[in-house]
Length: 354
Image 1 (cartoon, rainbow, N blue to C red):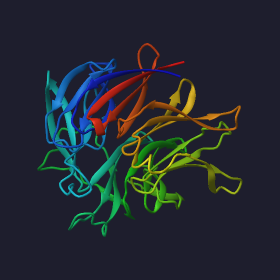
Image 2 (tube, helix red, strand yellow):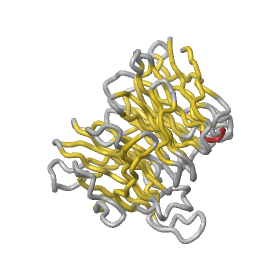
Image 3 (spheres, rainbow, N blue to C red):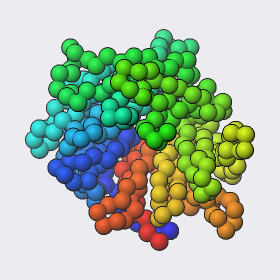
Image 4 (spheres, helix red, strand yellow):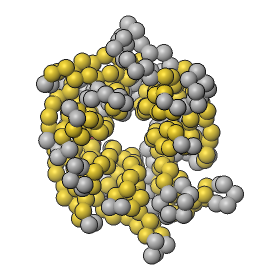
C-alpha cells in the first residue's frame, strides 16, 4: 500500500468531516470542534468556500438527501462538559462564502446524528451523549436517542420553530458511538455506549415505532459491523471503553453470539483515546480505519489476511492524533482518506494506491 499525503488545512482543533455534493460535484466538508470555521473542499483538497467562521462545536455533519450543497451539522458541542446548548443546524449555500445557517432542532448534548431512509421516508436520529449536567465530569444523567421524520421542506425551521423529536431509547451511559448501517434491507443506526452496542431501526411505516435491539453488552465508545473475513457474517468491531485504548473484533459464532476473534496487540499506553473510526472498501478489501489521539497518535488500516488467517495492520500516519477519518473514491477512481488530525490542527488527505 502506497500512501501520498497532502495537508489541506491547518484548522484549529479540526474534528468533523463529511462528503457533500456541491454544484453537482463531489466535495467534502471539514469543521472544527472549538469556536472555529467550517471549510468546503473539492475532491482534490482545494478549499472552495468558508461555510461559517463560528460558533463551531461541530461533532457531526451530513448532507440533506436530494439536495445540492445543503447539509445538517451539530453546533455548540464543545466538550462533554460544555454542550448544554448543542443543536442541529441547517446550512444552505446562498452565494460565494455566504451560507444561510438556521436551527433545525435543539438537542442538549447532541453528539452524533444521522439521516436514515426506510420505505421512502427519511428519518433523523439524534444521539445525546448525556441528558443532564451539573458539574464537571457529571455522568449521572445517561444519554438517549431521539428521532423523527425529516421533512422534505426544511425552510420553515429556525430558532422560533424547531423540529420536534420523540424519545427512541434512553438510559445510554456515555452515548458516544454512531454509524449508519444496512439492516434488513434498510438504513439503521449502530449506537455504542457504556451499556453496549445497539441496532436501532427507524419505523417500517410513517407513524410507526422505532425499534432498538442490543447486540453486545461490552462497553463501547464506537462500534462497527463489517464482514472482514469474507465468511458471510458481519464481524463486530469495538473501541472500549469510552474514549478507550482497547480495540477488539468479535466473530459471530454458531449460536448467534459475538466472541473475540482479534485484539489490537499494542501497549495500551500507546493507543490512548482511540477515536477515529471508518469502515470501507480500500483497494478492494474490507478495511477498518482507526486513529488514536494520545500515545503514538497513529492512524492505521486493519484488514483480513486470508493467507495468514488473521488480521493485519498497516500504518497510514503517526504523531497526528486523528479525531475522525473518512474514505471516498475520487473521479479518477483513486482511494482517498480524509483525516482531521486534531492534535496537530491539521486536515489531511491520503491518496492510497497499490
